[in-house]
Length: 96
Image (tube, rainbow, N blue to C red; front, top):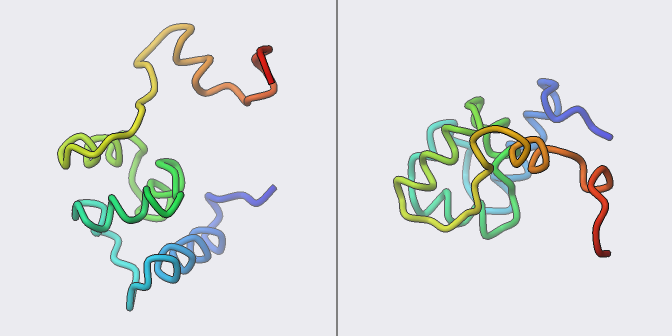
């Protein structure tokens, strides 16, 4: 598994985003722009990847999503529900 927080991995993620979205260059402030954010989410980049690429918290990405009225499920704020949200998929038994 690749450590997405390592500087080299972050640069690679930025290149992937720029390439996928056909951008001339990666802009660290682009997550504030609705068309960019929408395109990145639709292309399959998740909130954690965008947060890493833009060097911000996931909360910042969620706030930008809310500000632009984009639809994305958000994690619970506290308690057991938050723990379950953040748990690996195989840690929670259920239907397959």
